[in-house]
Length: 306
Image (cartoon, rainbow, N blue to C red; front, side, top):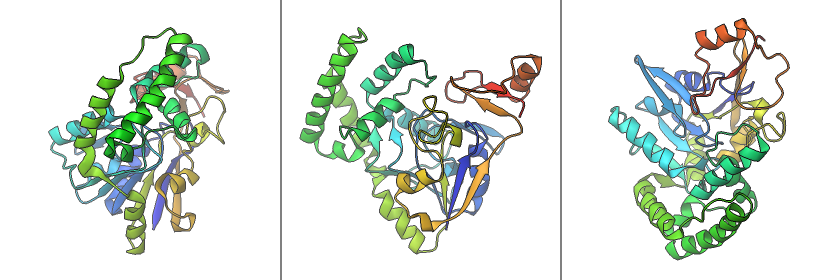
């Protein structure tokens, strides 16, 4: 059985809180798309926790958590998140599983994201999400599994960095990035996450065959879907329910329930059309009362009364 939780607006509908509640009856919570540009805020046992990559079910001790192949992973953000949870007394080892097919966000992805945002003004978080997906679909991306073969990893990294350095220097006037430092940092990351990496597609389909309940967690919202949202002011992946199948490697026939979330008023972070946006005192009051500031960026959210 698979339940998919989808934001039906522009994100920030409270998916993390709902996933936390529903995970009480789940065996596995699996994140299927996006990256550290998402922020799910939870209040568990009176304590506030903000998660960006690790599924919201991690606060339930009997629940396994999966970061699927459709997620792009920032090594720095992931390590910080694991450390934060462990310092809070949450057991992560043995419960978190990371797809070996997930793509990695590299430092040049973040630089390109910030540089492009200055000229395009889409309203991205600057976390390198879009450029990482670009490399994925241009078949030049670096996946978690590539870290296992150092010569191949260095070969791919050198080829990518030669191209990215040219773009960063010639187009954006940025400094050249050092490959040796990058290689050392990512190989150290490989040693750190090795115990978490597995074939999550096999893990999830085995769980389905055993009759277990999987809760699929998306990021952002349907109106930010790269295909079905307000293009080009969208995210770089598919937060809609179909993304759960490709982002986790599970069949559509396994999905028994889709939960779409809305809140009484709409919010949006970043640029793009928002016809009923409030620019008055009512909007300011809603923002203040609802603490409507991005969990990832801290940016004030744009508000609409309906």
